Length: 407
Ligand SMILES: [Zn+2]
View (cartoon, helix red, strand yellow):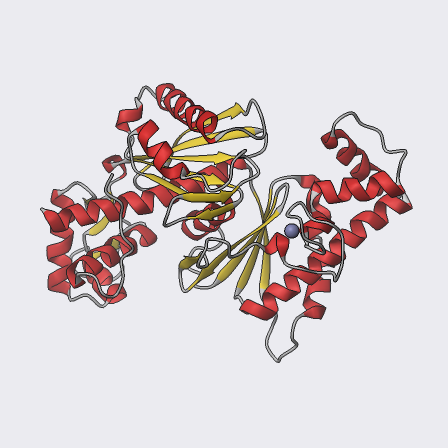
């Protein structure tokens, strides 16, 4: 299956202009040709030629001046352009430890349907996962009266270490094997381009296109789920590292010879703040904690802390201090304009309380400029899935624009 190579400075300048034009239209929602020229630095004549091709190919459409917002001043209202939603349908899937969330969006990012199913097991072989994803995708398409063949691309967000350009999962808590060429397996099963990425990167993509990161050039997304993830956006691009191992915030070290982490090393941030770490601590210091499942015991721990139980409170307080230290380290390395803390479960509020944020602020390098803004953005699996779909939307756009070149 033809894969979009990354658009680089060395590629065809006309293609680079086309990719810039479509990104600007997408980011703006709707925009006049002259404003596209201004935003991209591409000449107005070239913008006219490029947008004409895109209109012919059905990727972009004109909005009649009647339906566009009134322009101020005199003169003819300018015709605006927008991405044509009906051009393509994209799917996004987020695999979490208990569920598989699927979203279908159209080419302008409008949500068409949402579908959620239970995962039979938290860990499985790549073959079983591939089959499950194909089945789920078929069911999600059928719910909207469509077939898998009506979709143009699939984005998948999975936790673990993902080599995105190679479509390789080095390691994932979801998979029983290491170094799995999961993207190729999925493409063979669903017969469409698949865009596979680490799930924290999917969230960063969703924040950039639909959320708090819109219009922000440099920002970090810290995700709190069962582990701690990080998405890094630098200069408008998701930064992935060389081996796809970058942004493993959960495995940055916060303690010398510290607590044992699931990764096999000691002193990782996750070994203090992840669910399993809280429960491990509670098993030693709070043996009275009841509950048959880890979730029930975790709920009991949070309830005990809320009711003022000292030991429970000190477990959460230690996790909070570690988390604040981790955030301060990030700020000192990246100096981002914005940190988005993205978590789903209300129970983890203690990790992004005002107290934690001010603790972090006292540990960052003090200069005569305000520390980075921290925004809390709570969203569920469906928004992670939307991030994966957004990634597919970008990939399919690149492919579609490349096809204009070939035409
Ligand atoms: Zn670790």
